[in-house]
Length: 393
Ligand code: HEM
Image (cartoon, rainbow, N blue to C red):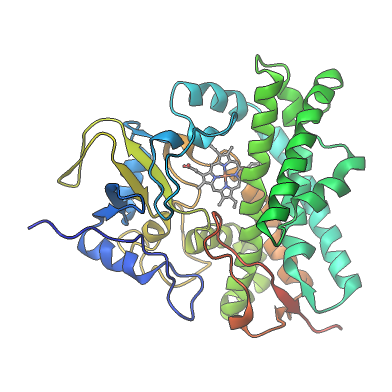
């Protein structure tokens, strides 16, 4: 007797814990980690909830990432168009390999070291500004957004004079309408930046890429994609990560008292929060997995958050423990599409979290935790605002 498909995709988080994945995902992982799922458009596909199977699907090239093959796991949007030019997450091999290898060569150790120096400067500038302003402060515009926005400027070589414009446009706008307008303005800006870099190259990833055989249009697509991939993700990790630390005061204290915890703290926060979720793939041929057959054309939704809370991989998975070795988590994905900017994201977080708790050792929420507005139903999970306060010496 086949079990009834999951319907709809579980998305409701448990009451009182905005950091945990929906409880239903945990129940499925125990019962049948590869479940049939009915998609909102009627498609009968699959849902993966264990760490092992998530890695198996994400690491298997017989699954496609192309948007036009997918069925949307939570919305009835009709046929999905192919991804925009430069969107690596929507490509399969060999197209993906061409772009990916060009880009990987630009994220060098030397460049990452250079970027680390800038993250340190930018972080301290933001902390100084917070101190001057005095409490309470909304940590999202004051800290979480500007650090990744300025780092993307570094990566793309946005001239200093344009950074104010860039930052304003890159902040998380309230309404979808405003968001769309800002995004369009940034896209136009990058489109104009490409020929400027070709004419006058500087020391940055975008200028470097102008020496490849990519066209201006492809370069603008990649620049825009890097912006989209690197901004909201890191900003939300910084804000939601701080919220998680403030809700776990003993963990906050552990990081404050031992800055050497920073690296493991970042991995654990990535695992615990898994803000970029779920992954979606489509089988391009019949594939046998976990004793079942996924037919060609069927879409598989991979809950990386459920995988990252799999007790078989991470003991006591629902506890935030900054001392844990959380390596092998799925927060940056897995396989050929694993996050290209993960070293940059790690540098930003490894600098920013310890600097924040060192500067404001008495940091706490300025409103009750239940009043923090969450980014529900967004592509990237996080908080909309994070009002914080501290004791002024
Ligand atoms: C891909 C998460 C920061 C650039 C991905 C994927 C995830 C992810 C889950 C895989 C998507 C998939 O399999 O379809 C994150 C998180 C970040 C972060 C949680 C912050 C904490 C960044 C930054 C950059 C970046 C700072 C660059 C500036 C990319 C790119 C890809 C990617 C280019 C596509 C790789 C490919 O398809 O080959 N990221 N990311 N990300 N990310 Fe990140």
